[in-house]
Every structure is written in C-alpha cells, then in structure tokens.
Amino acid sequence: MKKEKSVKKMKQYPSTSSILLSNLRKYQAKERALLIGRPYDCVSTPLVLYNSVFSDFKRDYNTENLPMNKEHNRWTLETIELMADFYMDENGRQKVFHEQLRILFGQEVTEDQLEDKSSNDGVLNFCTRNLLYLLIGIKNEIDAGYDPVVWAADSYAKYYTQTFEPLIHVNDLTHFEKIARLFKALHLGSDSLKNYYDSLPYTTVNNEDSQRYYPCLREVENVGEFFYTEKFNDKLLWRAETKKGCRQIIVKYTHRYNKNAHELCSNIGKAPGLLHVGTTCGFYYVVMEYIEGVKLRDCFLSRSEYDKIFKDIEEAISLLHLNDIVFADLRGSNILVIKDENKECRGMLVDFDWAGTNNVDSYPPFMNPSINWPTGAQDRMPLKMEHDIYWLNYLKKLYCPV
Image 1 (cartoon, rainbow, N blue to C red):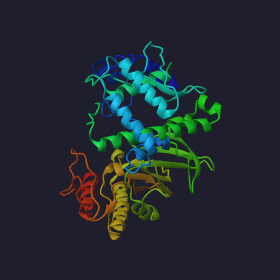
Image 2 (image 1 turned 30 degrees about the vertical axis):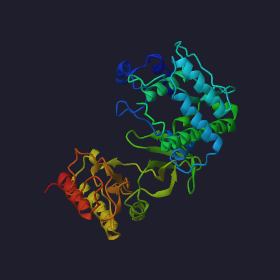
Image 3 (image 1 turned 90 degrees about the vertical axis):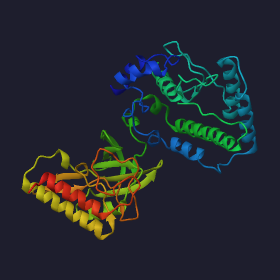
Image 4 (image 1 turned 120 degrees about the vertical axis):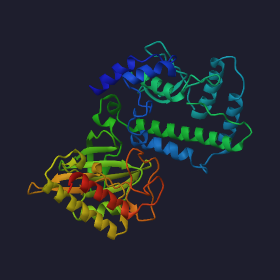
C-alpha cells in the first residue's frame, strides 16, 4: 500500500527534463514525494542507515590518504581535461563522459527512456535484476535553473515507477585530489553495492520486504535479531521487536550520546534499561527497553502525581551531578511519565544526547532560539550543573505552582 501510494505520487511529477526549480515548488508543497530537504522539513531517514555502502562512500571521499594508483590519477587528469573542453551541445559532452565512465567501471553506460518519454543521461544497472545503482546527470554548461540534487531524486524515483555545480580551478592540485577521491570512492561504492545485490537470492530483490523501509541494522549483541515495527515522527527513533521472545525494544540513532549518564540513571530505575550501544555508519546506535509512557509535556495530572514524578527526576539529576555529569536538556519533552507496578506515576529521563561533563563538554550548535535557555546555555558553550537546576525549578513551578 505504501509503495503504491508513492508510485502514484511520482507519476504526477513533471518529466525529469523539465523539473526546474520553478515548477518543482508547487509539486513539493502539495505532495512532498521527494524527500530532499526542500522545503526544510521534507526529510527522511539518512541514506547511510539503509546500507553501509553509502557511509563507506562518504568515508572514502573524505579520506585524504585513500589508496589510488597512478592509473586512476591519470584517468582523473584526463577526465578533467576532457570536461574542461568546450562542446557544442550536451550530447557531445555526454558521449565523451560516457566513454570515461566505461573505462573506470568496465561497463557500458546506457540511457533509459522512462514512461513519460523523458530520459536520463546514463545509468549503470544490473541487467539481470533491473536494479539501478548509478545515475548520471550531465549539463553542457552551468545552469542556474538546474539543481542536480532535485534532478537526481526525481530521475531515480521516475526510474522505479515505470545545487549548484562547484567551480574547479584547473591548476589547483588539491581539487585534482578531491576529484580523484570522488571517483575512486564512487567506483568502490558502486562495486560494493553491486556485490551486495549479487549476494542476495533473486527472489529477495523482487519481492516486497516490509523491512526495506527501515535501517539495515537488524541484530546486535545481548539482544539478538530484531525487526522494526514503527518509526517515531521527529527523530531517528524506532520501535522494534526481537525475533526471539517477542521483546519490545527501542532503537535510536544519534551523532551524540552519553552512555555513562544513561547507565547511571537506568541502574536506579530512572531511565529505560540500556541493552546495547555501538556505532554504525557514522552514528551511535542505542538499543534500550521499550517502556509504555507519556512525555511530561503531554500529561494532565494531579499535584501529588507531579510531586512523585519530580522526586524521581531530582534523584536522577542528583546522581548525575555526583558523577560530575550535566543532563543539559531537562525539558518536558525529555521526561517520560510511566506507571509502576502499583499503578502510580513515576518519572524517567530519556534522551541522553546532550549529557556531558560539567564545565568540559559543550552545548551543540544551532540550539532552538525560541526556547528560553538559562543564562550561559548557548551554542558551543560549556555545560553547567546550574543549568539543570534552572530547568528543574522551572518545570516544578510550571507543573506544581505554589
């Protein structure tokens, strides 16, 4: 059903040859089928979480000492020289670039005509599986009305429903190295993606798999195999279930996380139980117990119930401070209200992304300016225990006024 809905949306989009920014705006505002960050909230799960091939590509491109032999460097220099030349039209440039890619990948580049009669500028695919793994877009010269990200997203989506171009100074060897790394990383990544699909049973590729829309991490130590069941809207946070024992868990991905703070609080029952922490694709992944509860900001409780909740939170914050740790983001959205075995309300801390050492670690950049942060709580400034006290007092006054 989800797939059919997406296909229907994409068939309404203009052809790839005419999807300029001027006519894209009305489609994105209405349907938002292309999750490319335009508009700002039109985003999806980071691509790197679906397959490590994509994070490996980013890593390889940013590795300055990435191994590259002289043949690859010669190919890069030749390609730069050829692309710096003038061509009468896109077809001339496209023909030359296709030949360079054939040399690099060892495979002929083909053009596919789509159902709407538009075509892309070249693809590399698996003929036996009809799977696209490299999409090529070519413009003869810089075009202000052409966004390669938009074009690629639309063309890729069209294929399966059957920004600005940087200026490079040709005498700057640093740019030569970056271009060489780009194509080397592209070559390595394409090979890895091809090998991944080649390793799958043929029926797996052609059958609908409900887990294809979720991250590729499906098994961790101390938990075993699991499958995703639900994504929470505003974060990289999923509900999942273990294959053995049908245990409900939460799987979270984040760039910043304090394991020590989480363990301290979970050990005294003031945070969800921590099951496993690791890194993958440039993210921390945190696997924890799923606990039924409601965020404090969404609760309507009695004074006595709020008192019990804040007693728990004060205990958790005191323990963190005894260990020289600042929670840093003590707001109603990060306090979970649960019912204990006696059906009484209790409080738990969730989201240990900002927690860090007092006066050593710092706040992240781009903090929400609409929030009335305590004095000194600013982008890149040190975390301080008094900031936790500020939030604790603020919340108690808000929910338990004298």
